[in-house]
Length: 448
Image (tube, rainbow, N blue to C red):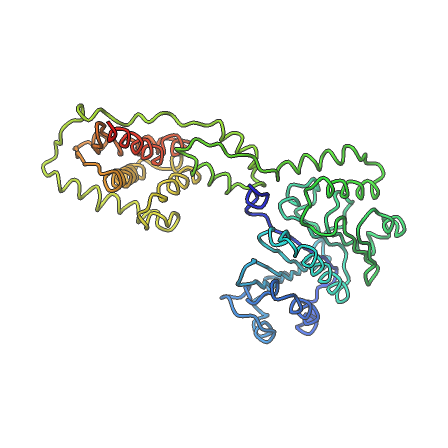
């Protein structure tokens, strides 16, 4: 597994701050920034306006006409997006902090793998640096950074939620911009002697510098050493060894580890691990999930012991299971779990994951549970019948209703009852596990 497959939600984040709010000065003050955005390469340039009441094709004239929609109280925001991969968002913000005007220009690029593409990483890094230069020539910058967004969020900076305020230097990034006030506080000569691969003075007294040629290897040993050396140079009271150790520990989160999940629930666990991502502690989750095994399936009887139908009309009961109850589940979850509309086996782990992840087993009222248990049981039973060739044995008490496959009678409604009894129950008593167990035993029975 590659690092980009491991960190599927990884993106690149560039943010530049200024004490000038061009959005307050009319459209003419905004146009120099729009020129820079429009000069981005074809693979980065946004083509849609996203802050308006509906998404519009970008043009400067259309943005001018709809600029009023960017204002909310004292805040302004313009969102431009790219409609084709890679996903690119360009945002222009304006707000106040402690009665001081602040603006920012941001670019986000997803997936991060775009900046790692072989043969393209240096060129694309150069485009980002050129973008910063161009913005700095049109807007005095107070601070800026460009880095992996995931790594940025994992960082130790206590002000990472608001990078706009004056701050001590807690971390260094791939791309760093220090405005004139920060330069003066550090000392221009000290800053200019910081270990870096690029150090460049910008207009209005700001300085741009890079720790590595590209952001692609931000978590590598070389990049962490470069980040640590630069930080220790700027903060002499810090120790290189401890600073580097902290960064190395963070890099471990980006190192893929093998997912050795129980095969009956592997799809469910993998979906949860991918959803949480590196920011959600994916590494520790995978380590925990590697040791997880659900309880053995107990919702079955030997076929010879399954009670006979006790309903007045067998076929009418079966029709109720499949046409009413199962369709109720489709109606309940077709938005959150669109796979249930397709009728394929992939629907089962997606449904199990949603029930588990959303905490359905914990949050249901008694009435809701009594509605969902028949729907879930019938949905599972329909797979046992349609895919494995099972035969319904209806009963007045739903938990006794069975599907006969080979020498076993499976109890899908009882399984559904168990799956909705607590927060973790949708995983411990998943539909996927029962189906796969029934599938294996049916194959084994057919070979006898």
